[in-house]
Amino acid sequence: MLFSAYDHNTFKPDPQLFLLAAAALGVAPKACAAIEDSLSGLRAGVAAGMQVFSLVPLSHLKEPLKPAPTYIAGLDALHSYIGA
Image (cartoon, rainbow, N blue to C red; front, side, top):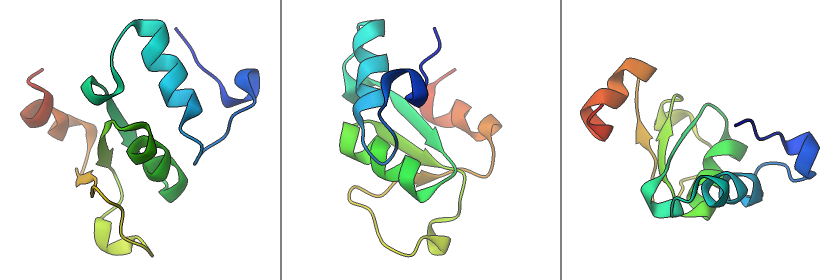
């Protein structure tokens, strides 16, 4: 499945696209992972109630997010968090 902000007219930091994807997959947002490389994407994932992983060092963010995303240096680091 592919979800596009342009198809649904909802853009980050609005969490609606993440929530639409979770609903279409039949998965609760809290059971989802959002992997992002922008502040607006991180905000959207946090607002959606997902577990958020940041590809940007958190020290580079201009504002703290609550709950704070988990920094990962690359996608291969996800294995230790999601058990894949």
